[in-house]
Image (cartoon, rainbow, N blue to C red; front, side):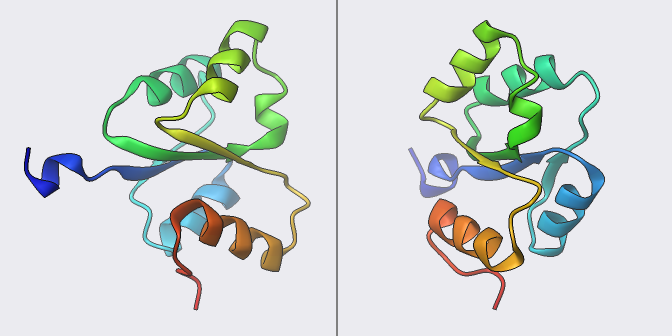
Length: 104
């Protein structure tokens, strides 16, 4: 398998502010919250995504079954961010999630 086939992407699913922030940081795969439950299940089933970022409040609205799938997913890793996260905390979470500081 070539290195290109092994590479995984970062994806974001959430509101427009969250998506815009990550688009500005260079994340290309961003998805709105329409049909959120089905969309998040589809995204965790994809093999091309290594990290899936979403909003914590949205995860709380998922059915038990889907929430369990999301919480137990290791490929992709699901990172949930709270809306009240300060900018510095958000930067640290992004850095921790992807292993690089993309904000500086």
